[in-house]
Length: 400
Image 1 (tube, helix red, strand yellow):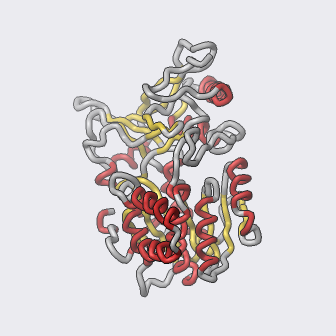
Image 2 (cartoon, helix red, strand yellow):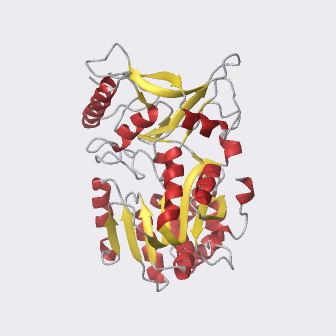
Image 3 (cartoon, helix red, strand yellow):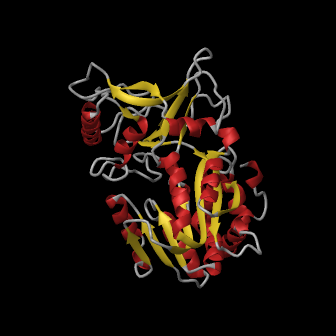
């Protein structure tokens, strides 16, 4: 039973409980494939089921593991130290003072960012309403426990607001939205294909095993890809049309304020660079990364980097402004990281200072999170007589 699928080299074996859950997810996806007319589904559909299928998907069935412990799958910047959220709060403060004292966070994970932001705002004498839209019941419970001291300020919502004024936060949200995978044909046949998923004829211990199929790309995907890059024989990558639609829709409900979006990715020219010929799709399992999303469904994270040019374009289509774009390192420094470190030094906690400095190195380092992660600010009806502090220096909008 433990060998029902071939795992990438170096990947740890899942424990029996996790494996049992993954097999349930695999069988559910196989059922969907078998019920489809062509006995295959798009990878976008496959990823959607693996991550978000009610009661089964990675993000909604209690499988998500975010922390620094060995059993975790990945760690986010807010989990490393409250210092990240404390700095973000400096930018949030500027936004809500220019709009309304409301914050809306999407996919709040364990609640680490929310807790740190509220903690810092409290120190600054600011009280704001904090809304959280979370699809995972298990994570929502963890958030409620972590944010108990701010329970009068925090409210969980189940759908997008009709209208909102204030600051929107989305940390590593767009990268987990299901993507469409495409592949260019050969030099002699430069057609565009979309990657689908079907079932292998042979199964392992009566458990489905998945394989890739190619089908001619639909008109919508073909238009999206051709607007982003030229035909390159054999080139494989992804397009995140859901993220683009989500951003464009934001323009209809963000009446006044700013959205701060943190994620790993590149401008379009770098994203679809000829040397990045295998795309950016990544899987995370027990702090190991690999590139095979068709194994361990339901118990591993699946992500793709963000094309920030397309995000900016979608914002403009939604009648929003792109108010800033820079690296995470630049954003944190601009937003007052060094001043906060000086406050820590003044408090004299040597052990905490040492721990914080190690985290800061990871947050700022080009070899760690500092350069790979970007921050983009999208605004609507916000006073622009002054720049947003997080983008006052080293704004890279000209690269989008």
